[in-house]
Length: 68
Image 1 (cartoon, rainbow, N blue to C red):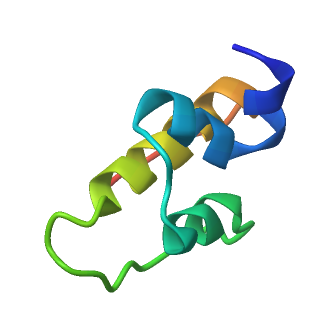
Image 2 (image 1 turned 180 degrees about the vertical axis):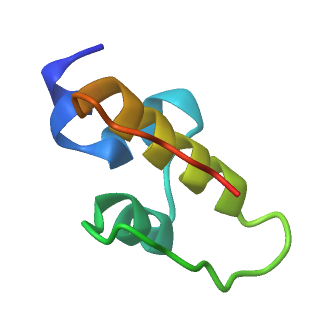
């Protein structure tokens, strides 16, 4: 992966999934440890959570990633 992906999870999302919506960019770039997504069906909630988890696992040393 590239420095661009390391610095911006939204860039990783764009390359893996497609162009993120504005709420997805905000969620991906948020420093919050916990997030709750209130969005319609088929809006990409699982994709956001997966890319955020992948980004953390790839670029944070010693990170423990748990998705429930």
